[in-house]
Length: 94
Image 1 (cartoon, rainbow, N blue to C red):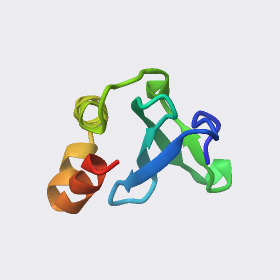
Image 2 (image 1 turned 120 degrees about the horizontal axis):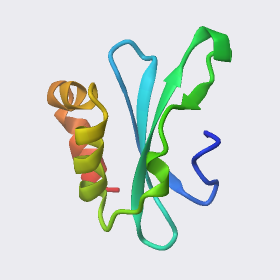
Image 3 (image 1 turned 30 degrees about the vertical axis):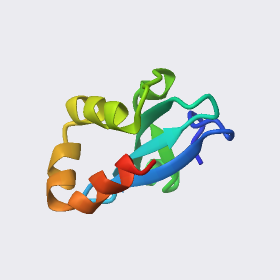
Image 4 (image 1 turned 180 degrees about the vertical axis):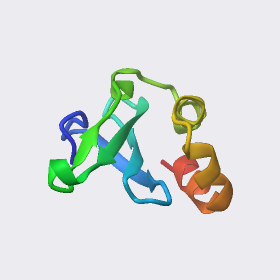
């Protein structure tokens, strides 16, 4: 789990790009809010996921609201969700 994902939060889906070097974690918090964070994985980081933005600081009322914002902010995410619509369904269940 990343440095920016609090251990009390529940990551319910992690969406990777086709190169498997970027991902977006969608998570819920104990207060009922939702959020997301984008990560990268590079050789110089020994293959560990490293946060690249500060999206996790924002709270959303629903998983759908968090996903809508993630799609606007993370350029590669729309293509992945188009190719894998099952991931969108998993976000809605979060």
